[in-house]
Length: 409
Image (cartoon, rainbow, N blue to C red):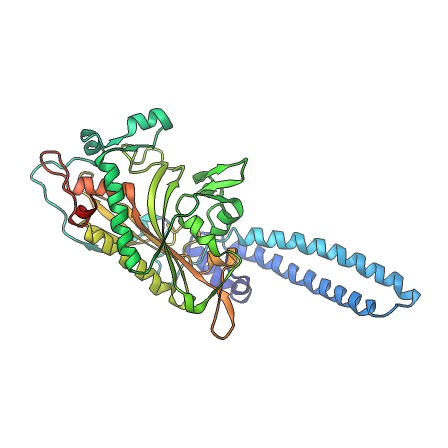
């Protein structure tokens, strides 16, 4: 949620940021209208309450009793009006996405994303490299046919060496991240509606279509463990000396993949359920840009150690998720497919989520302000398994294990 003070004091700046995101800036005027009405009602309400308090300290003369009754009735009406206008204000505020940071490329969609740099030399083969789903089928380590029979399309069984490779990737990544000060955590995968809304992932119909919702329980299955780690400190105050707080969370993740019809239908590149290690950080506002770079550096270190070729992409304003102010993706080279595929993403959501969840930090001088939150993929297990299958395939159909994983396999 955007700061109402920012909207009030600098509406043109907010409108400019929304236009960069291809969002209707006219909603800003609507928000300001509700805000002005709210402040007017609140002023009248406070004046009425003050009058009641003043006159209640003494026994009012008979001619004032009737007047006092009218003031009390007016206060009740104003309280109800304030409740309604605050609801309208918040509903409209929740429709606004985060504002992009100044260096984010401006564009309408992913076509405007900016490739920052490429790392590594693409592997050369003396045979025609196979696609990951062909390898999975030939080695009998990924079974989508039986998974479809049991669960439907976009599911898969990891079997034998593929299952062991998952745990190797997790242990390899955890060991490195723990050394860097990340606290391992296994969070719930079901969260209540209020917390998912606080994280900014069910604001639009398109957002809600992507989520699995248990109507009876009013709970959502997480699409990434960020969604259940972020609200941990809702309504709490963190101490400045304790920041940054960094978690690395393991969970299964669930996505409907709405709108992905026809995309990556073979294998397990795009599935409804997958496992992931996710980094999450609570940072001081003045340090969040550097923290974002740190998360990206950690991601790059993991991919480099696995010996994979990749490129770093900065998402344009038209491709940012609603809570994000800036996002970097890592796209890893898949030689069988002959293309780069996204395997990692990291975002700085500034105070967009913490403002909704009321997560603040207490400065050394006692001042309170909202923390900044950041998230980043450590390992999206399924996709990294596929990247390893394609990059480490041998002519005889076997797969070499990356050097970094040998002691875990």
